[in-house]
Length: 541
Image: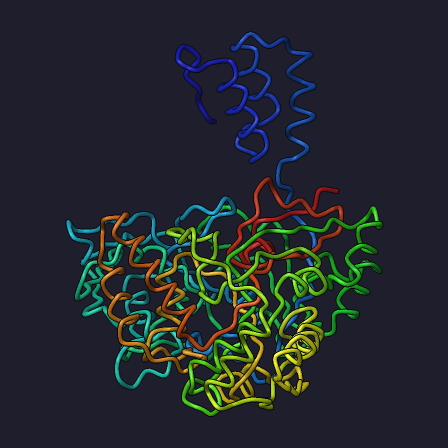
């Protein structure tokens, strides 16, 4: 039973504590009333409070069915290849990480119960819970964590997250439940870095590698049946080491078509969908059985241009392409106001160290024409690849941009690519594409993943020596003021020299049926409460 110190707790603080205890199920009805009475609350009043507060407590049971966008038949369990929402959402249900982003945006524990740096943050020590077990029954140990992180390191690694660990010099176990990470320089973001969705912990294979092929994990749910690009059926993992996992089972259905997703929600065939079609959002809002959730985030829509491929080799052409976009019109007509205007650097106001005061790049077709003339590239024609599965309105956004760009003498041919395999066959392969990026917790993580010179996901193939030097300095800088100045300089370099157009940072707009309780906060790291909604939410009736 939870104990309270009545001599030191104020009435309001006690009320809040009681409320939290009742909501989370840490107090029975009798204990709640007895504790309330000790605080001077009458029994009849306490009974009424219990009825109101305990009704909001998480309830176990039921099968939670959620329809998701962006799933492919070519996806797999290899954490180094995670890229689609299908892989990311699934990973957060059946696999564990060292740390996690809580619903309120703070950093919390997953497998790690605590972590501590040395004086210059070049060595981090993580303590691993002894309570975690894989679905196969094998206990999770420090060896599993070490091998899982090392899977993304080394010359032979093909992981997309390899560059995120480039400064790591050693990862070792210190006993069964302690992991030590050593770096070549200080990095204050290491605990946040461990939330990256690639760094899922898999069981060791006994030879220094990991068994990712079997789909074994230590997450809140275990996989019972699976068909990539179609559906996954999961059931609660009795060995889950944290709170949550209130549903008995999960059904994750891939519904790339926005009409199919929303129809399934309206008819009650699913309990939640990961992406609302903003064009029909107002219709969904009229349905009393549906709750629409909109969360401002650091997620971004990008349009990378290959900086090593004509005509984008010329910085004047790249900046002309940026000036040829009317972002206000795009946000109004495509995002329906559910977005923050981009400025061609991948650093959202939702991230720390946001550089205030940088001049906003606005629509200026005349200046774009002048830059094209300077580059000797007047009346150029470019292909822009996109697909419906990138985000709701992706094709419409590209068509609208093509119309805007005509005023600058730029002919944009919008190529509608197949939904299936877009990120494996189009992104990183074709020179001008539309891309949806999930949120990252810090600018260092985002820049290291997609803008660093040797990053596997350097989607614009941009190479800027000054930017890369600043990136390494900022990573190791423990003085927040100096670090902020460096990120400002990096933002200006990306804006003025980089090869990526950023129309906007999109809100996460998704929906649940009214009998789904989501709690008081929603994480802004991914859709569906940071991709962890299925293990954090519950049915209220």
